[in-house]
Image (cartoon, rainbow, N blue to C red; front, side, top):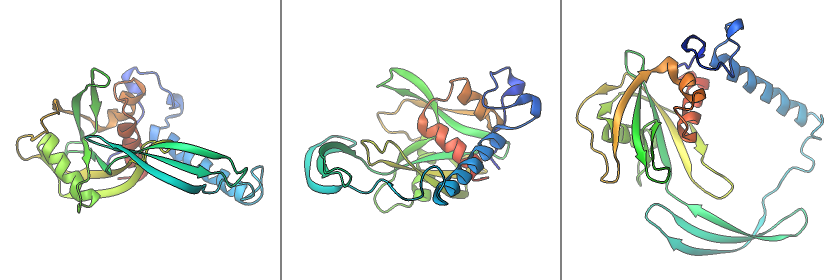
Length: 233
């Protein structure tokens, strides 16, 4: 089971963990999640949020225009009207295929990560293996394929634990999170021509420390690691 723990023993700044109280990173996020649920119930019961009164509603779509296609995404412009005050607004929206990212662990309790050169940043990042869900694939099928292609690892016990919305302000992209247990090296990597990467195995219990230390910064990787922990996967 993948459970991130606190970085206290590694000499890393302990936020958001109370090292003196022995709380783990997972304890912290679980408690925050419980507080969030209580807050939702308070609002629904007529607390400071006033229940459903004044809740945002979908805007009326007036028009939609396809603008351009690029290698990995398309762009469209929508015009919509606010139901609250009648304001009309243009929205530029990026459409792209669904993605998948893998939280894969070995029998020895190691995370299977990839170091990859990212040209927009002009730097190498440490990430969870990720890719595009091809047409007709389920998230689990796509995840196992991407894991094999990017790392050469395979695992039989795979679970789809949730879906992330990458950036809802201007993108439609959704990224599925798949947890793979018992991953083993089965063959050579088979990356795309544009991918420059190598496999890196790290202790699973070092994940939180690597995030807070700034070693893992990809929002997809950070969210996937957290979601895997919250799901108890």
